[in-house]
Structures are given as C-alpha cells and as structure tokens.
Length: 358
Image (tube, rainbow, N blue to C red; front, top):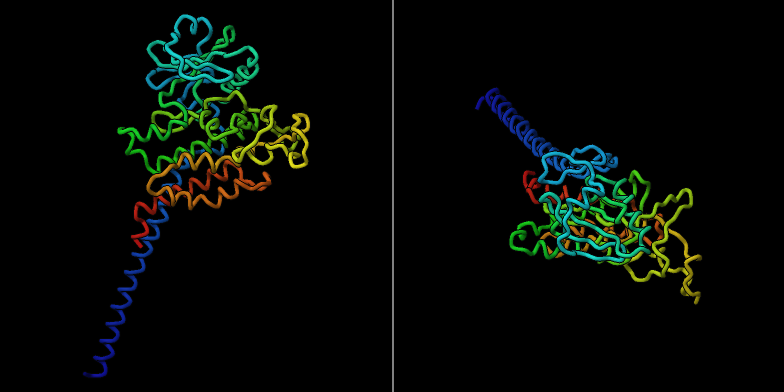
C-alpha cells in the first residue's frame, strides 16, 4: 500500500469514528432530556393536584361564597336556611353519633345529604365552633357545607357514602375497588391527608390544630373518603387556634392524655415526679402535635400492597423527623407534603421504566 493511501485510509477511519461518536452523544442527551422532561411533567401534574402555596379562597366547584353545588347539580345554590331545611330536608336514618353531634343520612330534593344535630346542650359551644370553622374554611379540602339552622342546631353537609378513613381497608377490599388497591392510590390518599394539615395550619382562620386526634381511630374518623378516593376533613368541632410567636397555645381537652400516639408535649410532664395531673399547670402546645401523628396515620393508609415497602423506605427519613421529641425540630406539613410528592414522582418514573432508556 502506498504511503498516501495509508494516510487517506486512516483519515477516513478517523472520520467514521468521529461520526459514530457524534451520533452517539445526541442519543444519550435525548435520553437524559426525556428523563428530565418526564420528571418535570409528573411533578407539575402532582403540583396541580396538591397546590398548597395559598389556601383556596372559594369552593373548588366554582361557586360564589355562601353557595354550594353537589356533583349531580347543574347550578350553584345558596346555603339552605331554616325554612328550607325544615320543609325540604327529610331525615332517613342515623348513621353516626358522637359526643357533640348525631349524624343522619337525609334527602334534599332527591340529593343525599348528611344532617347533623346537636347531641346535648352542654356541647353547644363545640357545635357552634364546628359550624364556624365549616363556614370559614370552605374549600376543596373541607366537606361542603349545604346549609345550617341555628334555631334547632342543624347542619347540612354533602354526603359521602364511603364514610370515614376508618373504612379505607374495607372499601379497597371490595371487588369493584380492588384495582384501586395500589401504592399509588394509597400514597395519594396520604398526600391528601397531609395537604389538609397544611391547609389547617395556614388557614384563613389562622393556624388551627386538630384536637380530636388523641388516637388513630379518632383521627381517622375526622376525615371522609370521597367516591373518587380523595379525602376531605369533616369534623371541625375541636380546632383551636395557635400563635406560637404570641404565646397562644392549645390544650386538647381538660384531662390527662397518654399513649404513644399523642405527641410527647401533650403528655403530663410532671408524672415522674409524682405530681397528679393538673389542667392549670399543663403546658400548651402548637400545631407540631399534628406532625408527630403523621407517620402512624400514614402507616395505616399505606396498608400492605405491592410497592408499599418501598414507599415506607423512601418516607423513613421524613417520618423520623416527624417523631422528633422536640417539636421545634419537626418539619412543617408542607415540607412533609413536598417529600411525599417527590417520592410519588420518583416511583412513578421508575415504574414507567424511564431508567431503562439510559
């Protein structure tokens, strides 16, 4: 082979190698770009579902304030008042009863509604507080108020046939819902729960603490499961306001609280010294008590499904922070929610196989 031919061949091989490399690099970049874009799309979708930077100022159904519109209604209607409730709301059967209210399944113009009645006069203050909170906090994360009558202490709200979050396991075990019994749906329910805490901690009525949450069962009973498997908070009878910077703190009831479910600061601090419980000497606390309870509630909500163990693994660090004995070291509900959203996006991406593109 002549020297100049050898040089030309080497030059041609060099160009071929360079061409192959130049074609390979864009392919990798395309994969990386696709992965990045997929993450952005998933996160933006989740953010649209759980936009919590600002509390909602009007109902998610697009009605004016002081109006309601249930799923089968074409138009918004003003809140029902005493004459309409007395004439048009028909009580069907008792479906729940607590210390403050008796709750009946009722009917209004062919619509199923929940009719709440004061159980006993000594709980009137709690009843009126719950109504006040319902009126002030109306939005996508709170059960929809349909009407009220102060004359006979009645409150009408939207009816959710699946009941409280206590029923989650039973609902997902039904044949028609078994395809929804996935880590995705369960984690979404958990995100709804934490998003509600964030809303209550930053509500139009100030920072509110969930005081009816001294056990897992009591906490779950405060929330309703909607037919599309989302969550709304329902029972707002015990939502004291706190302003930590001004020394305004809460005390959930006048009796001693015990057990691992309630936060350490909610327990009588002088028991080891042999001092009997005293409501007057019991220190107050703030919204971080709600944060302490998140891991226990979410463990129930996630249940036992394929992929659930991996979700627990991803949430381990943030849940460990929620259980800090010093409430000042616990994250905010928004910080927890953002971690949940990130975990959801990561696991959805991984399940979709985007990593295989690399």
